[in-house]
Length: 256
Length: 256
Image 1 (cartoon, each protein chain N blue to C red):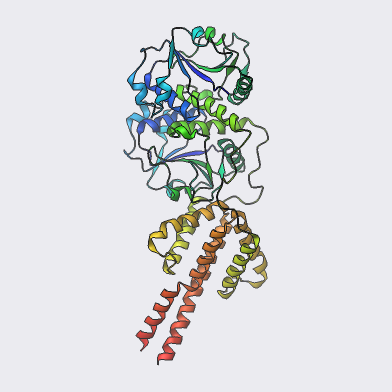
Image 2: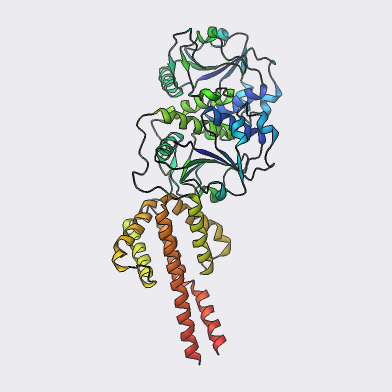
């Protein structure tokens, strides 16, 4: 069974990246990906703080954007507080471990996403994820260190491995699509909606895009469903084109 | 109910003491005791790394020996690997949380003991404890950072507290739409797709409709999301009114 990938979105401090690598190694994880690390990569200070978990750091992959970093993953859970704007399911670290384990056992590539030290995750990033993992922090002191957040979720993953009867993940049937297929669909849909003048007023476009993506991310589409939805968008948009053509022709014949 | 005391036996780095204070605060703990800290106490670097959990550090008590530090506690669990020499019960972090919670609820003063960064705990120290907590570390990389060990056990304590009122799945927020609203949306979508010639070959229409509906049903849309999706369908199929009018006018002026 493949272990979860850990994705750090715009991490700032190399020491924290090293501490994340260390705690990943503690709990048996090794695939670490960085999205746009603030100070570039590689950084010696990461190795200095990894306490020997060099094989994790040596294999780090760096991506310019989050969609690229998660392109081949099928289930991505974001560790963050729940944003009010989204209806993405919220699970505990333990529930996340159980669900991701069941998904991984059925052959899916799964990932855990964490935001950078200062800014955390944007709602737009969370909208790409299938679920939100919320660690039960005391609201009185809610700034959790990045490596601690990884520690808690990775600990639950490893603890869950020892559990005998995990909860079933979404039953049987075809696996969810890779995130790259979803991204392709989102962009197709958004391009067509842009053409159709849907994003109005323009300043609302970001939140409209976010809400649409989150809605589809929640449904955890299969490849077949992604193709179906692309077909839906194409059919509707093309239909509009024909309608416009008809209207234009009508106008033309009326004016001539 | 009194929260567990955290005892660090001969800690070395002030940064780690600060990181422990921070993660204690994250999980609602505040009583921190140090046994014979290597560099003395207080240390500015601890405050610098506590990320604002100053109240924990301000209240730290320092003791020359472990027996003095745990003198008033009734249950002390040591987080460490199990020493061969002792037959002290070994529990998981989760079992420890459950047992300590039961003890605390019955009015006992409970504590969690951690060894220093380099040497860990001596068998003699462990022998003072009622149980050993073993975190399920990968033997390939077993050096767990001190604050991470506190994080995992404190997280289990806090999770155990919440077990009676578990976090709601999907949290709060708007309720899912009634089925009637969904049906209205489905029919709207299907009418437009029919117009656009999407359902081809015709004998596949039923299964295509079913699959589309199942996809949206799974996402459990809110009323607002149903309205959004209806807007998407309308925009794709017809364009927004203004734009359509402009295009028709453009066509007209071009032809006249």
